Structures are given as structure tokens and as C-alpha cells.
Image 1 (tube, one colour):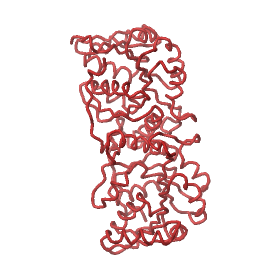
Image 2 (cartoon, rainbow over the protein chains, first blue to last red):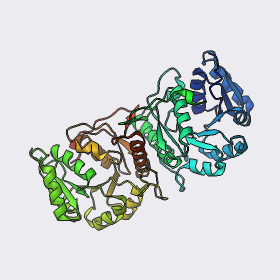
Image 3 (cartoon, helix red, strand yellow):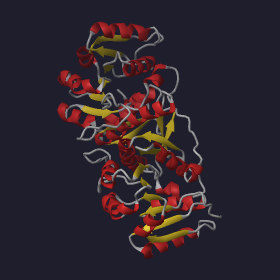
Image 4 (cartoon, one colour):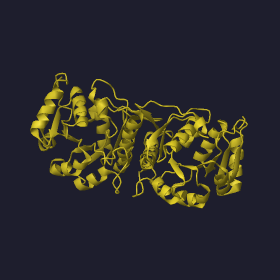
Length: 233
Length: 233
């Protein structure tokens, strides 16, 4: 599959993990150039090689988080909660003027099935404050099971809430979700990410109680307005 | 429809509002004895009379919140956030040994489409602390649009997250939801109510942005285990 020049290059920090790898594979198959970042360039290269074997000719490049953040037009972060602030801080200067998609869920082990939001509200709001107004922080994909992402040819039976204070940036992320096989909706301002963040613990709780691993949500009663991924330029 | 003696009597505090009235109507039609409470006995009687005209022979009784809490086996509270603590406090002694279903959403006007959870986490946790261990507090129905409830013969295209620290009490509420035409799921401990509480603001935001009034969620990837309302004895 050829890479069109209109599509932004997507960098995924923490991309060697399950969630990041699933997103990387789906975007690569949709024709995006994907840079898979990790703290270790070696680990990133290994993960990228594995994914490329499934990517149907598309090429995912493995590199350090720094290199991915520097070269990408849109930066996505899929790291554990404990690494959220430090990872974003380490690439802060490289994010200026870019959309930064945070997928972090504030899970506090060992009770990950119990909602434990920061006292300040959503975790991502603190991140936006730290990064400042020159970075357009958008929160998304917290409720998508990595199991669902992994089967890259299947549409996903879970919708995405996209929260952020910049509506155009949210539109871009809605387009990226569509490219990866998901319906996404404008969830409102960044503060509303608290709902998606809290919901992940509820979905983990559902998985445990009902003995499944793909609990998710669908939005009902709202017309889905498909946004072409062409807005993601 | 005759009232079977096996079903608990349901008292609804703040039942003259849209959410409480919709639940009252649905439970009355399902054969429950429903006591509709309000601060004003007169207002309760008026609301009950209106509902009885639609209830197909069932009888909803209007009375004060105190009287409803005293006579009911299960007490449901559907009041605005600003009245949550004071209403529950006023009937505290009448709730001992009972299931108390809190439907309150911590909406902070004027920005009701913005998630503004209390710093302590979910609003209902503070309520359980105030009421003490002898009251089984369960959180449910926060995400159900009053518009959906009002059309009492239609099944509802939105699922219910039921959170609470007592699993048997959650089962009873799942049965009550089924009786009212809704699928409900065990959402986990009371702390997880934060997700449902936050989600309501997101649903209001979706309603505003997409110009609808019935935004909701469906749980996906989880088998729905219908619980008979016979457990609600």
C-alpha cells in the first residue's frame, strides 16, 4: 500500500505495548506512515518488525519515543499511568503546534477494576496544563480493548469518546478512529475525559465479573457523522 | 393489574420530577406498588394523578418523601444534585435495613455538559458514608434520559450501570431495571459510580452537539444475564 502524502505521519509513544501496537497496525493498514516509539529503540524495532509481518506491505518504523515525537505530525501516547507525565514531559518541546492524543487511563494497581480518578478530575487535564497551550491535547481510545484492536481486519464493537478543548483537533482524531475501524464521537471538553477514564475501570470490572475480555460501549441515540480521514492532514 | 405481595413496595423520593415519574410509571405498569414522594404532599398527589391516567389501571400513590421512605421496602431517590444530601439526611432513620437506590448526577449548573465530579470521587460515596453501613446504597439509572423513560411502553435503548458494595442489592436493582424495560449490568463497587455520574455530562454534551435528546450507551462484548424481577422481594 502506498503512503499518500496528504496523510499525517503518526508517532505512537509507548507503541510497543498492546494498545499502541494495535493502533499502529490499523493505521499502517489504512495507509498512514506510523512511527512506533519506545524508550528503547531496540524494543521498538522488534515490535515494529512483528507488526510489519501482519501489516500487508505497509511499513511501521520502530525508534525511540523522542525520534517518533520529533518526526510525527500527530503524536499518540499509549503508556501506563505511572509513565504518563514523565513521558509527555520528556518530549514536551517536540509537541509544539501538534495534536497530542493521550490514551492514558489512570489505573491504580492493584485495584484496576475500581475507579480511582485523580482528585483534580481527569488525568489528562493535568497533562494539558503541563504541556501548555501550544499543544492540542485530545483524549481518546481509553475504552478500546487491546484484544479488539489486535484483530486488525475486524471492525470494532466499541465506540470512542473524543474529548478536547479544540474542536478541529477532535475532528482529526475522529477521522483517525474511522481509519482504524472505529466510530468516534465528540465527547466535549477535555474535562469530560474523566468519563472515559473512569469507564475503563468499569469495563475491566465487567470483564472480570462476566468472564470476558472485550467489554465496551456503544453510543446510542446519536447519529454517527462519519468524518473522512482526509481531514487528518 | 393486581399487586402481588411478593414484590417490594417502591418509594421514589423526588418522584414528581421527570426521571422519577418515568420510573414510577414503568414500575407501576410492571405490577409494583409505587409510592411517589415529594417535599409537598400536594405536588406528589398531582403528579401521581397524572401518571395514573397513563398507568393502565395501576395505582401510584402520592405522598411526602418521609411517608414514601417510611412505607417503602426499596427507596429510590431522583432529586437534583443540590438536594441530594439534604433529602437523604431527612429520611436517614427510615432507610435502615433497606436498599437505597441513588439516581443523583453531580451536575453543577450552568455547565451541566461539563464533567465536574466532587473531589472525593463519586457523589454517591459521600452519601453512603453519611447514611452508614445499615443502608445498602446502590447507584443506578444516571444515564437514562427522562425522554426515554416517559414513553412507558417502549424498551429503552440505553443500558444501566449498577454500582454498589453489596452484590445482592445490585442484583435486586438489576431486576428492577429489567421490570422497567432496561438491561442493567453489575458495574462494580460504589466507587465505580463515578463513571456513570461523569458519563451523564458527556451524554448531555452529545445531546447538545448532535442536536438530539436521547443519547445513551449500550454495553458491548458482555453477555446480558437477565435477572428476574422475582429476586426483588
